[in-house]
Image 1 (cartoon, one colour):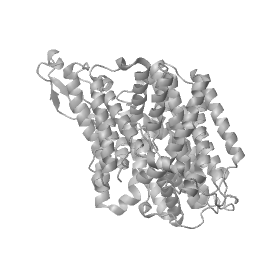
Image 2 (cartoon, helix red, strand yellow):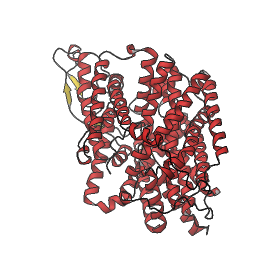
Image 3 (cartoon, one colour):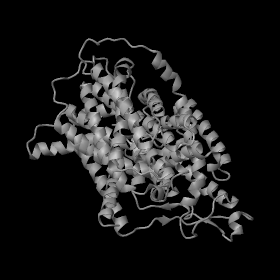
Length: 627
């Protein structure tokens, strides 16, 4: 279960790497005429869309929860397909309902993946960052309408790109291939699919039980013993402090399976990289900054996460952004080449099930007008700035779609940062313009790539593309409704809740840091952070270049710059847990390859979903109890 070479936080992980069946690497698209779609088999049924909206809405809470913990979201297509398969198979046996067909399940997973991806529409990065910078809060209707409008931009762009990228250019869209092959496998081996469903649910129950026990019995983190002594003559020594304990530096073992599950998905390279980053940041740079007086120590008996984060996030963000943009730069030649190519119009006279052109242009215009209007209404962004931002979004969504199609990575973070940098120049000192214009870009890029992967799945299964476009829109609506409510329940007070031990929110830290620079200038950075940023940015560039140039067999030994940078902004105990999960996954893969190929991904996904959903339920319970 190796991690993609340029996997990074604030981006959607490739399902080809995280949730692929064991034979996906051997999949090759057949040369048959896949443009002949199936108009006969039931697809866009009420139960298919309703299943996807309900499952995706619940799974959106998982991505919001994990996004606020570690800055990552996960593609939930296969998880949704397994859950729907299990539910309707049970209904078929108990209530004698008609079989839930393969193409119905494809509509279900299309709807659910769109709903689950609502976290990338701003809920785990620019929206809370704006609240922390300006104090502006959002009601549920406002969040719901805003996130849905962001998704619509990406969906309309994807509809226009389908023929060129999937039919003509035949880009891989590995996640789409993985979903198609999994669906075929499920319906050819129904018993195996039910076993995987049970493993998924079992992992969720175990993680949920531990989360409940942790909450009820107040199980603390187990502090790792040890200390880093203060330097002679340093600021700590002058205060009479002998040094920082590992507990102060956030090194501990936490009673949680969420990060274990994440580690099982991201692979050993990322797991080792994030542990190395934790040692470097919290174990070396943190004590050094304390000794230099750049950071003031906190309560000797408590974690110093908050004070240290205020300094460490700057080099961490610099490393993540520089590595992200460098990796993106390597994709430019293929992007430009693809834009120059002009595919033939073979089959244009046949009904391939595409969205009619008149519908497409009306949807595109409607998405543009709605986005510009909401930017002006909700964030007081001048219409010409909002208009320019949406036009840029259209261009960068095209770029993101092609990058995702070729590399299986959706560069949400990179797209957002490009827009932040641009609007930092166009509208200096305006955090709303800086963050929310970039929000449209990043969220639209995510939804665009998500639908293109789903359309690839449908293309391989001969599904009707316009049915999937409708399903994607329904999913975005469900995600906006449920996900926005979940966000408000989890973090009603972002300014005081986020960037803390409980909610590290690394993506929020990154977006907020970039916006602060353009809002207040370089003086926004603490003493010594500028030098640290320069060195960290250089390391990010070098590592990103190296991992692109070295052979694949060497690349696995190159530290991931994104994982290194992430370690600077999450507590060290998160890194320790992810490393443990990645190590378990490696051992399982080596000792039981067949079991691992069948169940590793679904068990890890179950752990993540179980704790996330339980965490949301506990937050709701506290609200109802008045606490």
